[in-house]
Image (cartoon, rainbow, N blue to C red; front, side, top):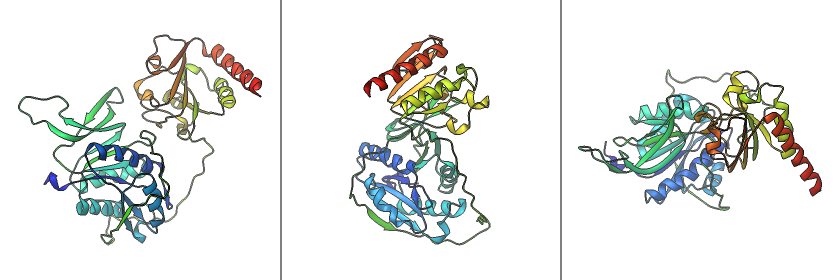
Length: 349
């Protein structure tokens, strides 16, 4: 493999039902940063689907300089084999140095298969990406390579953080959890170079047939879209006691979320779970109530603008990441806080 042939930062622009997934726009924002560090002028989005050209302009507005469109009826709905063939073919033809994929249900299925197809590595569920040297520190007798993609992710059940590189193969591939990276401000009217590419599709015994698509509607709030989250942990004590958090969220016009311990106890649905095995969130205001602050939970909320922790244990790790901390009994602190906020809002009119 001639590494010099591989140039540019690419992202897989996931779409479902001809609507771009939010992760595609988040990846474009990060791709712009990586391209700048590599002195690359273009960021490329790879768009797979059927009749999807109408999505190109939105990709351009969020940072794509070029969009490679593979438009074919075989790609109308996500199926592993045709999508793997399409993306692997794009890689072999256009040779990106870096390819980012969202760690969604689709991305987690597609990414590993594509990396295997093109004989490269893949780092899954990354929480941080940057350009730097690898090994991180010089090692006697080993070449330190520069301008490598350093991919950071929780490891060993979230008990440590690992930084991984792929110095000897290309592209350098990573899947990134939704909500971790930030979208750039869209540039209205921006245009991208459009490249039409179709490798051709021939059904084989790996193709599946979709017999029926059943869409599930959920009444659970989308915590990744919330600007204010009131999150509770095991320390809340019981599912009934979450009424205190519901009241606080209501006066703040926020949303209730929770830790894994709460989900494991059956108090709240998994869709509300924040953390490494739940969802990554970055609201403007995050309340951590009765949450100890295990690294698995912190990994999912540490990028919040303001973090307020309420816990009776003054040594709880959550206070290490909190902007403001209250040591006390949540059964007294939370109702008092809710009351004060109500009074302040009433006085404001």
